[in-house]
Image (cartoon, rainbow, N blue to C red; front, side, top):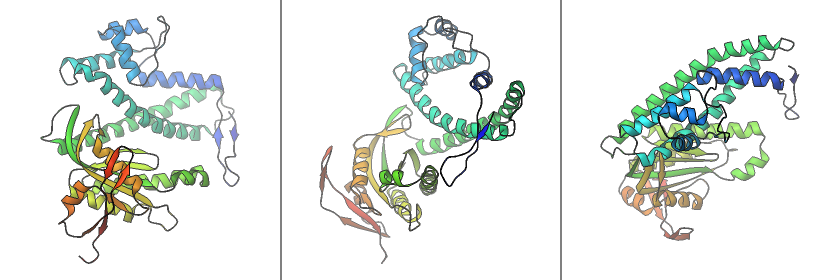
Length: 351
């Protein structure tokens, strides 16, 4: 194990190199710890143990984001994999997930967990490497033992925190959805919004990796705080853009205006554009679809930096709401929408 430095000319980063052989051994140790045992079973065996067909097992496995070994005799599955397949099958058998939706449910779960795992592995790996920085010269067995000890400390804490946040979100989402259709797919009337950073592409060329990361962290953190304070929820974030939803038109207006007022407020920060649209949306496995989503995205793209644009339906709801000023703009023709009605939303400073 050796240490190196150089990332940028004015910054120094210390990394610890691990030999390929040791890296494979550490990976095997971690995998066995995470999966509850070594790989023991082939595709056919795991399907038999789970009580599902081979085709169904392969389909679910791929849907969750994992590769399938084309070698029929390849040993790649553990007892935990069989238990997971049995769990999915039982949810279908009990009618909790409809048979035609099980692949979509597995895919949604896999995509969500994949992003979470990327962040967690980065966090855990950085901590482990930092702890091993002084282990240069140690024998490989000692290093493997040290990694096992660190993993035994970190993983239960991360897993416990993850379970808590998941349960808290379940409770919050249940409160919002009482009285709505209890299906994986449902239509609801919502206000959908987008906020994006103006000039993000050029920023990626101007800022270093650390500066860009700090900017995105401030953007996501402040946006999430504003949205959560007004009964909204973040649907997803993609780089320079956050997509959110809220039930109340007045809450939606406050979220949009406070995003402009409180997110990236420094003079040197880039400006935001915000767009809102209201109407029926398709709710599918935590994501939102439909013309309202498309309208909100188009309004965001049309908005001037530092402004909020809303659609006609939301403008009608806010017409008599105190504290807001609405200005109707000339309709625009944009891709996918022949006539986009648009209104600028501002605070009424005279109210």
